[in-house]
Image (cartoon, rainbow, N blue to C red; front, side, top):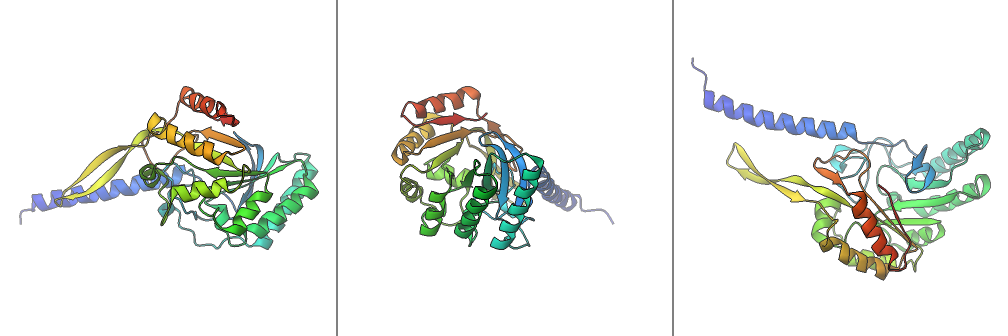
Length: 301
């Protein structure tokens, strides 16, 4: 019996495409980082110094209200956790043990940083954990700062707001004010109103640090099927270094009036291909424009 070459060829094309997607997904997952929980490090931060990390997310995956295409922890769908969030008690116990060990080693952290595998403020006991952390900081390393790295999606909640007012470095993400860019790059889960986020950042009355990533490059988006054997693809820019994005962002920063701004670019492998670092010259130019508004600004390359 003669083989049906057309059918076989079509099936091979489809299988190759599926296999290729699997390999890309696997490579992306392997190139990204999942942090231990609830304590990791210390690590040397480009922006904060010797940082002892506090991860309020599960140790085996990622929980975040954003699904950023540049996230060092990978895309949400690649990192679904099975473990629960660490409890308040587990965080306090692990943090105290690590601070005791660092005290004996004579190497105290410059900062205790809430970061890790997703959005720390989504933890249901976040305000209480902040209080525990401040107490332990005051006892073991009173010169250290307490920092929170957040995407600002829970800053409208009063208890979260109040807890963030108690930390030294309340660092909130605002990559752009363009809704289309936010949907393309940050990919928030559910409804996201950038003006409402800006208003919640203004409510800190200056006790907030704005952190923004600038990058270049483009990503490939599948545009749906064209017949059974082909799919249309489109290259979509993710460059937010141009005036179209920078100028409105500067207006929002001025409106928020933060104590400081941090601008940075890609430093680690990303789960999405096609992303490129912003240049030193681009970051310096943006930094200088922030400084010209009377707001301190730090650029990390």
